[in-house]
Amino acid sequence: MIEQRRGVWYLYGILILFTLWYIVASLVNLPIIPTPWIVMKNLLGIFVSKILIHGSYSLWRIVAGVILAVIIGVPAGLCMGYFPKWDRALSPIVYLTYPIPKIALLPIMMLLLGLGEVSKILMIFLIIIFQVIIAVRDGVKSIPKETYYPLYSLGATFGNIFREILIPASMPKFLTSIRVAMATAISVLFFTETFGTEYGMGYFIMDAWMRVNYLEMYSGIVVLSCMGLVLFGVIDYLDRKICHWQYK
Amino acid sequence: MIQIKNLNVTYEAMGEGYTALENINLELGAGKTCAIIGPSGCGKSTLLKVLAGIIKKYEGVVEINGQPITPMKQKIGFIPQNYGLLPWKNVYENIRLSAKIKNKKDSDHSRELDFFVQQLGLAGLEGRYPGELSGGQQQRVALARSFLLKPDLLLMDEPFSALDAMTREEIQNVFLDVWRKYSVSTILVTHYVEEALYLGQKIVILSGIPGSISTIIDNPLFGIDDIRNHQDFFQLSLALRKMIKEDWSK
Ligand SMILES: Nc1ncnc2c1ncn2[C@@H]1O[C@H](COP(=O)(O)OP(=O)(O)O)[C@@H](O)[C@H]1O
Ligand SMILES: [Mg+2]
Image (cartoon, rainbow over all chains, first blue to last red; front, side):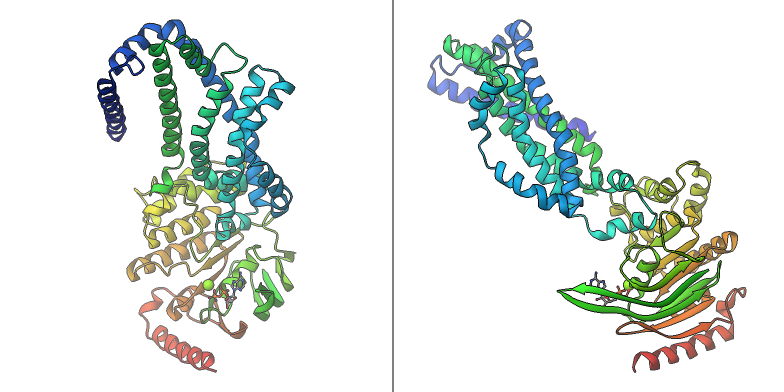
């Protein structure tokens, strides 16, 4: 019931956006802003032949970067939150490297790691990992110490505490950090895909722009924003599935 | 057998030492119950935390059956003052937690678990989260968790405080049933003289500050059927109350 209603709200969002787009397109009345209907028709036409392959590449890079950031960032954040020594040792490194604009590292990474997948995935990874580390660390730090008492008195191992307390307690902040980082990750992905590749939504959109094919360009933009919608939707879904206790 | 000798506990607060417990000596035979009563802030929770292996920094000797407190080896059931439920686990998972961590191998407790759920009036609430329960319900979940563990030592910090009078009497009897069945050594903290008289074979009166033992009473009325309706019970609770009043006003 509630799931269905949520879907309806997404439809409302799409409808409002399309209406605004249509109004602007009608007012400007130039080929540079086509109406939504023509774009959607074009999108359907090229979906199988072009969009599918470019979209899959972009999605793979994002997902790979996020998973890598989670695999390394979550354990690091948990340990920094739980063991003050880890925090003292690692926080300065995190604070020093976090503010470096990652995009500025792109040329270096491309020189060192080549123009292929590795440098693109690493870029996404670098953008997401700091937010994950800090969110998870602060999530663990904000657990009241009384929460641990029943487990301490049961003689719980670190593994028990990890599973029963640290992970579930830091999960909400972790998901929020992924949410915040995701939008940045997608825009940076777009940028990296304009170099050294012939696949990905970034390449597709820039290529369409060079060819002055506005319809394809807009189709690409629509797909990119739908990808964002799907990724955010997945995170929201996980939030409801795993963290529903916090809304009680 | 629980043995406490010359126990001193000091908290570090704002760079200064603060003595919470001073020179505590207490002995409790295996399978006995002991009620601790004392004004708030006198160190009752601190004493339980030492016995639960949570406070490790103390002076003196604290032993269970001649062994120092080691939660890894002993089975200690501890119900903290705030019930100690994990907000991300539902009632069922919270109850199961103790047995899950302690009795890793034989993992089927479902029948006993159902029994305690029934006994403690939690049926129908198994799927709820602590945030959806009243204080009294949370308290009963914490009790179920500890009872299921069948601990060597049961520590309860004001375990019935959030229950209404009728439920409290019921749950106190559930506790006594469990205690009789498994003869669990129990130390409980309470604010009520009647509760101490009903549940404690020994009654320890603490006074503060710093917390120290002022009297230990062997309760002659413990374990008598329906004692709460006897004249003796009223008289002894009156006498005890008078004694405590004088003691704490010193
Ligand atoms: N973590 C702590 N740090 C410093 N002082 C504490 C801490 N915990 C308790 N105290 C102090 O120790 C005393 C005893 O506390 P507690 O054992 O909780 O009392 P009770 O349970 O009898 O009300 C109180 O005066 C309290 O302020
Ligand atoms: Mg207390």
